[in-house]
Image 1 (tube, rainbow, N blue to C red):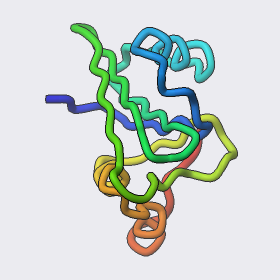
Image 2 (image 1 turned 90 degrees about the horizontal axis):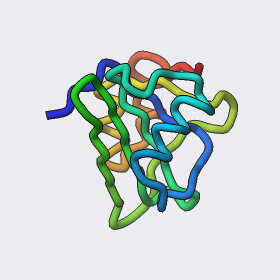
Image 3 (image 1 turned 90 degrees about the vertical axis):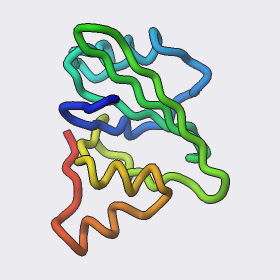
Length: 113
């Protein structure tokens, strides 16, 4: 079971043909973060129909992929490189729900880094 300490969305879309190693390099070189800090880093493709989550910790690395059959994943607008969201927002995101709209009506928007 994966239980990330934090969840970050990479705001800019990427080519999702890349695997674990390239995603870990992006986390370290582009975002300046420790790729093995127990946080989940979520990337999406340009069309917004697929996401990849990479999570590294002291024992190994998880790589998870999700594809929507209809619609697109709601993503933060360009601005900062990373956007931190909580577990509830991530659950809504994975279901294809407009989590930003729900957050605005419940407790405020996610914050960018």
